[in-house]
Amino acid sequence: MDTGHTAWLLTSTALVLFMTPGLAFFYGGMVRGRNVLAMLMKNYVAMGVVTVTWIVIGYSLAFSGDAGGLGLIGDLEFFALGELGFGTEIGLDDGGDYPDSVFLLFQLMFAIITPALISGAVAERMKFTSWVVFIAIWSIVVYAPMAHWVWGGGFIGSTDTEIPGIGALDFAGGLVVHINAGVAALALVMVLGPRLGWRREVMRPHALPFTVLGAGMLWFGWFGFNAGSALAADGAAGNAFLTTQIAAGVAALAWALAEQVKHGRPTTLGFASGAVAGLVAITPAAGFVSPLWALVIGAAAGVICFLALQIKFRYGFDDSLDVVAVHMIGGIVGALLLGLFAEAAIGGTDGAFFGNVEQLLRQAISIVVALVFSFVVTYVIAVIIDRTMGLRVSEDEERRGLDVSLHEEQGYVLTE
Picture 1 (tube, rainbow, N blue to C red):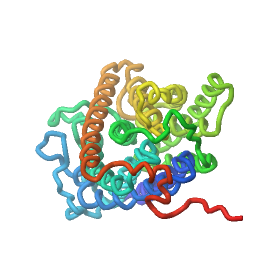
Picture 2: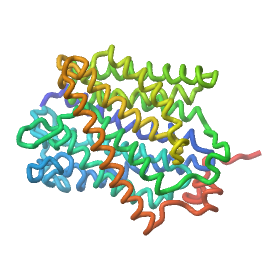
Picture 3: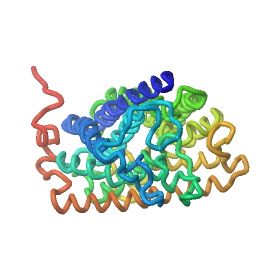
Picture 4: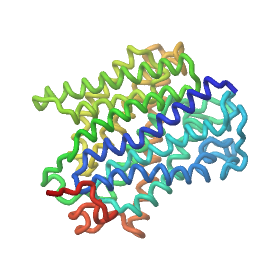
């Protein structure tokens, strides 16, 4: 066991877990004051629910040996962690020099934050009990298979001749986390329906300082998310750390500049959202591109994700906190530009800009697969829950606010 690599992976694990409270604050500040605790709770509860699903079956579905050699799902070798070892090899037998348990924990943190990302789209109107059931099911039947396809020896990431694969690249979760969660958010809100008064009432964020704080926590934790995905304290981790910072900073400036051009003033919410968009877009590419191309990816993400805010108004779906525009679109931008700018000298393989046009095609195919799979399965899950438990609160509960109606608590108590 290499203690340096293990220490970095443990540190990165803690950083990625820290992102979920950061996401809670990022989203919590953007909802109205009567829904802040409900928003925080929808994020925090994933830290409990997904821990259970991951330990029991999710990790095994994602990272056990491939069942049947088809590249579709894990073989349940690690069901309830029964066969998990604590030595120096991980389930993929890729020569990792850290304990199985550390790799499992690192991947658990990704599994936690991915469904939590979806919560921003359903803000202010979804039942808490239905949300808990949804993320439990979704983490098993959507997230775990996607993780296997991309990282666990499955057909999206595979270049093994024994398992016909697409050969797409995804360093830290553009496909598995962001596109997956973003399109799932779209499917869920299409079943859930819009908030009362959407497009008729002004629904302003109630505490933008919370949102800025949350964005800072996300930015900080993202270094574990991306640089930790090198699975070693080495040059690849250093490059991922650097490209992450560059893309986030440039995207934040690009979003603010786009606001200045279009609306005549930049906003704190825009700068924070731009930073997150840049972090999303660099995630699949962080260990495969040079700092120069990270700058390009960040600039593209800041502008394109800002423009994508109009999608929900054009097509009439209420994505409350713009999960689709930031995570789905940002993930697509990053995954595609990775296909252009990847350099074999840095990691992975060359992209189209360096003569390998096929890699861009591989990236595009993988994006389509992720979009279709996640959307269809999420939509089915949502419909089933809606017809059994019901997805959304009553009109009276929504008007009173979810803090009181669902949790019998208040985020703010004003006294004289």
